[in-house]
Length: 445
Image (tube, rainbow, N blue to C red; front, side):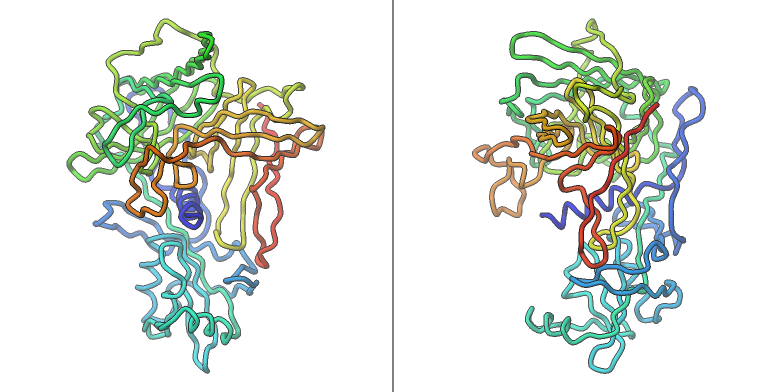
């Protein structure tokens, strides 16, 4: 599961470049795509997945990388200069997930080891001819790792989704509501299950899309004593990508430019043709967005909150924080990670400008520069580690008897007069597998 999460995060950050967004109707120029990096290898259409991917060579980002459990040098070999028998295999690996190609000596011959998150490492050893070297046992594979020499990395490939919303119908149009009660699981099954019932409030969000490319997000925090806090955030939106199987399945990417200043790219997918529900995430258990006839909170208004939070002397973690991740082991590439902690105890996480999830947070203790936080994520999918799932069941079936998410404890360290932040678990790995914290810097207006 940890490896699957690494893959999901890596792909989410990598698959972010492509064609410009499609303006729906008026409203000025859409924001430009984030800059890409690396050198293009080629662009390929995958009929079975109905998408076009651009393979990028990002090897030049590194001089040394981690191979299995030790550091090795990088000696770049362009894709076109690889042995002919290997090219199709390397391309296939690269189209499935970020891929590293290692060259080494073994028993007097040159062999290549391809490492990719969707393939087992044991199956990724090839001769220059393209012949796959198979190991009868895991012990034999471990013996191979002990016997190799002159190991170096020759190529690192990152796939980018080539986006296009040309000719896409706008099925987002309408009013949608998400709350902490209506659970969606096993593709099309719904239950009512309270999320984070131990918190003193719950959250309901209403998102409305107009035909002219404008809309709003209304957030309603409902406390157990009956009090409510409401925020209202108008936005302009643009479609950036559209995929469909031609029947009930539809998948969008779209940019929201909030009036208060934030620009966020979201996904929305539906297996019901957007007739009743859409999900933000590709998971089997979510609290999704349901199609409703009208906004039940249309008479409740409040201030906007999708902007840069002001510095708060009483709560130093409040703010917008940006950090660069560039690991030389396990995952590769450059990711700009943004955490937003608002003064009302809510926030969200972005990879580049791509939405990961929203969250509620609590500050459980505060000792000078050291804080103890708990993060309660929502508007996302839930994994086995979060709860809801049947233990050991690879069918990913929902199990009502399983424990529910309770929030993730996270230590935080704030310094540099409140302008630098480190978060527990957020680290870069050097080629030798050593870790260093990602430093998030405060973003001001």
